[in-house]
Length: 389
Ligand SMILES: NC(=O)c1ccc[n+]([C@@H]2O[C@H](COP(=O)([O-])OP(=O)(O)OC[C@H]3O[C@@H](n4cnc5c(N)ncnc54)[C@H](O)[C@@H]3O)[C@@H](O)[C@H]2O)c1
Image (cartoon, rainbow, N blue to C red; front, side, top):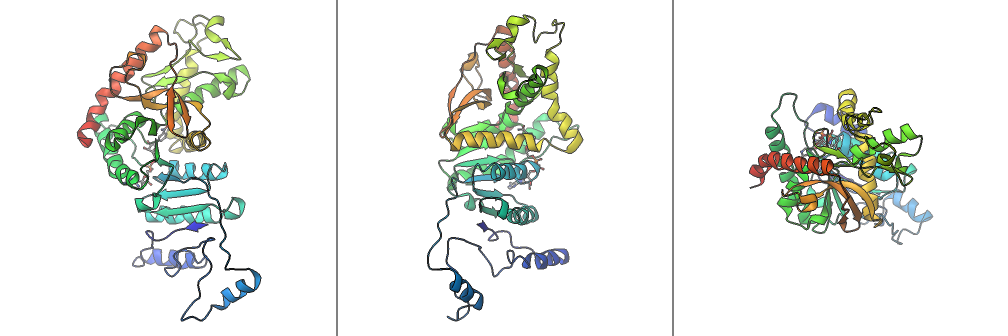
C-alpha cells in the first residue's frame, strides 16, 4: 500500500512541474482526485450513487465488501530524504525489516520522486505501506524516528557555526516528531552525531535509553572489515570496537580486548596498536576512521554502509534482539567521564532502545583518550547549547 499526497501536491504554476504532473497521472497517483491508494478500504462508488464501471468489474471478480487486512509491522519514520535517508529507506525495505515506512522531507520533488520510484518496486517487495509527507503529523505512532536531516561542514567553516546550524535543524524537527510519537526511539544519524544525539535528548527530555546516535558504529564496521581482510575471516568474527567520539580525532580503538575466536591480539603482540609496533597494526585503525572522509571525497557520502548500519540497529530494536552495538549514548559516569555528553560505548540494543552499557576493561591509555574525547565534545557542545537554551 502506498499513501501519498496530502502534503506533496505538485505546484501546477511551474511549467516543468506541469509536465511532471501529467506524467505522474499515467500512474494515477499524483492526480489531485486520487488521494489514497489503499488495500484496506473497499472501492468507493463514483459520481451520484452510480457505480463506476471499473469498480463494477472489480465487484464481478472480488468480494469487495471484505476488508483486506494487511500487517505492515511497526512504523519507522525517516526524516531527511537525501542520499542517506533514501538509502536507509531502501535498505529497510529490501532487508524486510519493516513494511511500514514514513518518509519526511521539506523538499516536495524529492518526496514525489522517491515515492514513485519505490512504488514501482512494490511487486518485488511485500506490498509495503509507504507515506511521503512534509507534515510530521504523518509520522504518528512511529516505533523509531531516524534523523538524517542536516548539512555538511563547509571547507573553511568554523566548527561552532557548523554545529549551531545543524543543532538548529534538529531543534526544528524533533519536538513535532515526539508530539506524534511520544514513545518513539530516536535514532540520530546526522552529523556531528554525538552532539546532535545530546541535542535531541536535551530538547525532548525523554529517557536517555530512547536516544541512540549511530556514533562509532560505522568506524567499528570499517575496523572489523580491515581486520577480517588481514585474518581472512568474516568481519563479524573480529571482536573489536572503536568507541568514544565518532570520527578520526578522539575515537578509541580498543586493542586491549580485540580478539579473534577468543584469542586476544595483544597476547600475541603486546605492542599492538602502539606506534612502536613493528607490524604497524595502528594503521588499520587510521584507515578505518579516515575511510568516511575518503568516500565523501569520492562519491559525496557513505550512504550504503550507514544505511546497513542503521537497518541493523532498527532490526535489533524491532526484534528485541539485544545486540551489542557501539552506538552513541549518554556516558556521564562511565569510565570516570565527568561531562554530560553522548559518546559511543558498546550498548545492548533492544525494544526499549539502549537497555545497558557494557563496561569494558579499558587500559589507561584507552580511558584517557576516551575522557579527552568527552571533554572535546563538551567544549564543542557549547555552540549547540546556545541554540537550544
Ligand atoms: N553518522 C554517520 O556516520 C554519517 C555518515 C555520513 C553522513 N552523515 C550525516 O547524515 C546527514 C544526512 O546526509 P545527506 O547526505 O543525506 O545530507 P543532505 O544534507 O544532502 O540531506 C539532508 C536532507 O534533509 C532535508 N531537510 C533539511 N532540513 C529539514 C527540515 N527542517 N525538515 C525536513 N527535511 C529537512 C533536506 O531537504 C535534505 O533532503 C548529514 O548530517 C551528514 O553529515 C552521517
